[in-house]
Length: 212
Length: 366
Image (cartoon, rainbow over all chains, first blue to last red; front, side, top):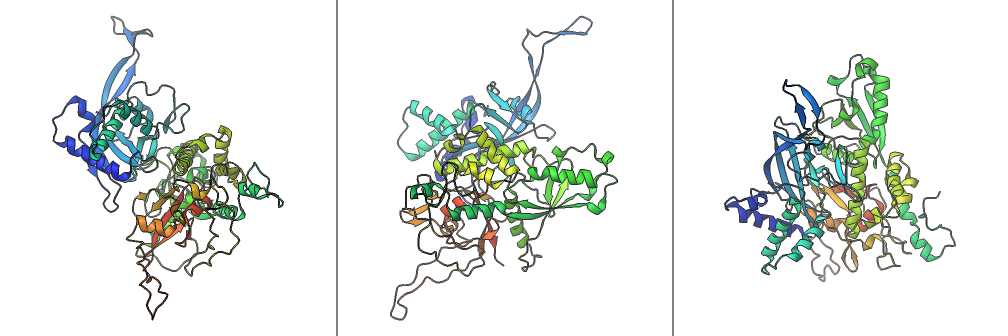
């Protein structure tokens, strides 16, 4: 759990640490974030950035004979993954006032500006494979079985009020704190601890989302 | 009327004190009933540019007195029936898809279908009161005029699909969040049988107070039985609600009581501003319940400045009082201008919406 001032501090430290660093694959997730605040109300700040992904369209493997005629679908062969379209995504790390942890919000659009449906989202390169396991989808949410909240659903961005998709944060604290136990102790100063907490949060997020 | 007790205990006059503990006391039930029964007038008309050919233009408006605790998607069946049966020409309307219908206010603001109707109305009333052309006069309820569009919902600005299923999920999510805010876990909500959880939504759909509260009383904190002494009379402000007797926080064990929660689920709506949500513990210290005044001074001090302390006593003025503070703003909850000495815990137990949240809308005095 983080208080709001701790969240604000951790985010600013993150932006600071990576704004002048050289790009590297390992730190992709942590770079390129911008800290924005609400114009008139304090303590509604959040991180944001834009990212690009691809739609993943799966085709069954189809045999084509020498006359260029389709013959049969080969069920035994693995489906071919055709990365077709470029998708743009606005990503946000906001503070969840209810659960008192960071929360990942995002939107995603086709190249023509149309928003994606939930199925298109789930089959894009934003999500790690296996996201659909043990889960039920509707047009408006993805829910893992036996959980209190949908994993993926829609909500208004807490600062801008814009409708976004978001990943439910309620399991995050447990996961982050478990992982922190396994990691070597950082120096005792508060700033280092906060930054470490936030980085660990990105690791947990990275198990669901490709935070490229 | 079976509304005063939980399902576990009968409320008989001879019941001993621990039974009365469990039964929801009269005042709490009264205010919950008043909240439940609150309605607001809506006036819905289809965008004239979108009316199908041959529509009966004499009947272009649908008027409804809608429950504050309900949701626009739940009103859709009756709205659709009215327009399809009475207004639209059958052939012209046969291709309309009601999952594409969406609402705008007459002023052009998108209406958030996942907000309770009472909240939409109160926010709109305040917005309208701030426009330069608005008149100060009317205390009568003015209908909220909505434009119904039949196609092309602006999906990037509105949550998708206002279906009853999506609405139900959003509603259940709010209840669970409220549970989490109060107790740090959603055990009370998730501990309900699926049938009971569904029963909450059924109670909203059918607008049945008993059905809803039969389940909700298991998870909503109560305020303790009232004290014997009479309450302080209400101030002379324009409040329309008598100040309720304050609950006794040191009273009989109220493990699940409104004054023992970690924080009260409250959100603050500032005109043309963001929604503000913070931690709201019920007590300032061991003996002082947090009031609406404390809450507002904490969160929006520019609109609710703290009272400066009273000057020290002098011979001329042995019992000084703090100087009066100008009050540029007021707090509207369930459509009522609330006295600032109202306790937050009491609001959480008695005047919350059906989704568990106390919505405080801030208006500005002229």
